[in-house]
Amino acid sequence: MRVLFFFILLLTIQSCATKKYSKKHLLPEGIKSATEEIYVVVNNQKKLLQKKHMVFTKNGRIKYSKTVDSLGNLLQETEKKLWFVVKSYPDKEPYYCKTRWKPKQRERISCYTKKQYKQNEAIYYYNTDGTIDKIVDNFTTFHTQYFYYTNKELSKIVIRDKNDTLIDEVLIRCATKDEKGTCLKEIRIWTKTNNKEEIHFSPNYD
Image 1 (spheres, helix red, strand yellow):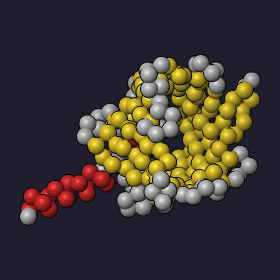
Image 2 (spheres, one colour):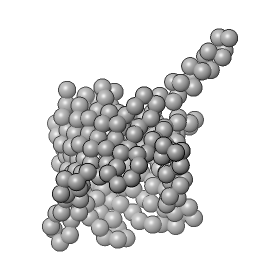
Image 3 (tube, one colour):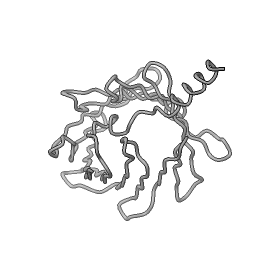
Image 4 (cartoon, rainbow, N blue to C red):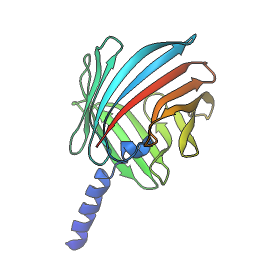
């Protein structure tokens, strides 16, 4: 009986032991909320693509988020429940996303509609410090994203298809940091498509 109880407890703990957003994205402890703005840069002119406001739990996971476009139109809302995350959209039914912890520093994140139709699924592989090592898409693009770090900062993402053919490479540089080391302005350049983005991050701490 004790063995069965321990096994059930272990499964429960594993299902809850998802990696913290703050660890994945190299954010410091104590972050309370943040606003993220993504701009596309063309001929040195910036155009806002979307703005995302996030509210964090005390342990660094996203409790609630709201993403809008450049005109303020709602694109997505997320809300953390006990066992899953609800993603709501203005033009389609919500997704219910479950995270299952797997051995060897992996998580399987799967999203379904209420009718249990699978919409997407990815396997996240992590480094020992909680940062992302790679993301394998198992449902839509079937691409794999490989994450590279320099001096404990994300410096490059390499995207390959299921045949290991290079799709694109994203070079990443932090232009501005705050006193806690959070990157406030990040530059991303796609080497094959020559796209350029700026990500502006405004955090609030406890």
